[in-house]
Length: 605
Image 1 (cartoon, rainbow, N blue to C red):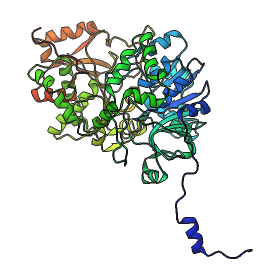
Image 2 (cartoon, one colour; image 1 turned 180 degrees about the vertical axis):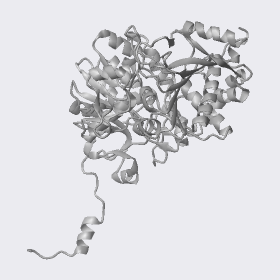
Image 3 (cartoon, rainbow, N blue to C red; image 1 turned 90 degrees about the vertical axis):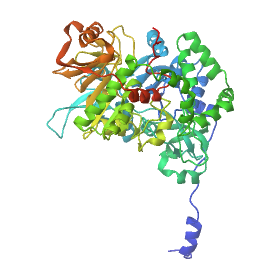
Image 4 (cartoon, rainbow, N blue to C red; image 1 turned 120 degrees about the vertical axis):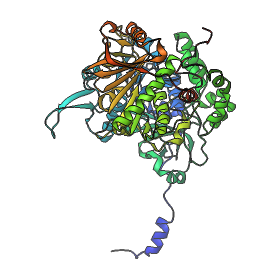
């Protein structure tokens, strides 16, 4: 040993008196980040957390205006601001579970329809859970992961042809076929987070939806935008919320409100104020999609017509942003409900509409099934299916029933607040008992091996076997896709479907089997209730509110059913009592604008 011996106490003082700082400074403007790290033809993953990388994608659109982009998109949802990539002509292909619009009600997007009709855009429709599993497999360095989803549907044929899904023999069981999904590895991921230090350690507040698996799998790393750049001490204080380490990040770009019009939840993060969804902006964007020219004008105003994200925020105005921060408050629903007071009072004495009867009867049936089968989780889709689950939670408490509400995007144990029926209403987040992601909610709570889950869903089409179509019409037009519906239909304990009684919806045979019908137990329409018996939907109950007699209602059901002449009617047909006043009042509190229930009929008509 050479040299003098160093006192260990002095070495401790020199080496351990302070924690290491940020290793590198990756801060740059969004324009520089896009120029440096994005190339035409990349497979990009705009990560769908509860916040989205809107500011980054706007810069991407500006940068590639008039250029051949040819990106392949992979993310759980191609909706809202993601549609702008399609409308701007940047995508040649998309791998997603939902391609359409989600607010105020789910439905097809004309932007998607026009792109598919042009022949320059291709869509691979999977499921919400399998998208996350494919990205997780990529992050784990595995060629594939097993899944309980897809088998038995027409999705299996399409995804099999695309090389994304297959069946293999189970090497550890009896050799039975096991579905697997192929790993998906993006080239570059885009993430918007609450905060990061200059190196890129990213603080991401849950719920996480598809989670950051794509970001961790991306070959070239993550282009990160943040509401605020912070020091490394802030990151250490919130290390439990860091989802992306600095080593995966190629650029850190400060972009306040960078997920607008989507909100950002983050209770307890010092100095960071949550902001709510900007619903009027979302509605304006959806209306603009109706024609190619209107959408071009919208892009010109909000994307091309500003120089950068600062210009976008200036166009929004500080008053609007401050209002969104106020609306993110957990108790502001009370003020909003008072705003709707006159509307609620005006319908207080009106009888239930057919839609309201349907939702109330569905909620009653949820309680009945929970009590009979012992389900402890009710996971709902959006719209009327969600309202039925929410109302059931209140009715169940009065009956001594205990079950947790869950959503596919990562909320568990929430107690929905009035005034806003949107499934991702930020006021519901502080009421949860767990915030997770798609794998935890869909993969385990709702579809895991020990699940005791009842799922409530809507349906674009449903046939006499209970099969559901939310993907393709017979004329080749696209609806919206599976979302998480196929995952639930494949593995949840039981499905309850809520769908208005129309011949176009109740089909003898669906055009495309998005969801096999084996786990559908009941279907509730606005006239009656079906039960799946011996592989076929059988009418087992009708509503007293729907006609003068049970025979009259059955005749109306047959006239609005694609297999009406062959419809089986149970000999013990039930005659269901109308909605009660308290049930109606509770339901109307959840949806005072009647986005999902429709306008009440004029009592004079």
